[in-house]
Image (cartoon, rainbow, N blue to C red):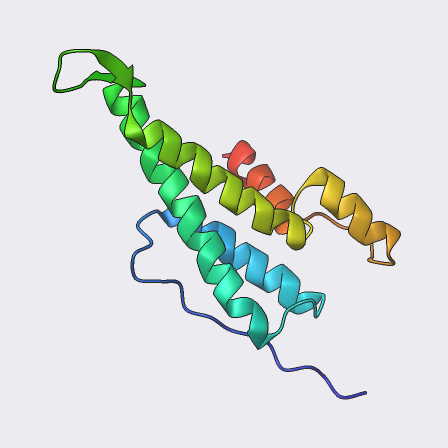
Length: 131
């Protein structure tokens, strides 16, 4: 049987967090091993990496500056990063479900004949917890 060529992709230059690089590397390796990825998936992977990186950026700002701020009128309002954080997470999660990275979507993929094993997200999180 002819072995399928591995798909490679370069992360966008806008990616700032090493955590995003590691997560996307693990995802790509696992998808290549299971032959569940094609060149057509590359734009989605870019979108996924960008969304996750933006989520991390917003999380850092909120952790440093707090969830609220004073606007020009002197009123206490929610930081714009909080909305961006929520939107970025939603976008990442939408794509993660497509690739079987959530518990529910992983179960659905297994039900359709996918083999047992941890998702890239599971493997990455286990690695982070072991540190």
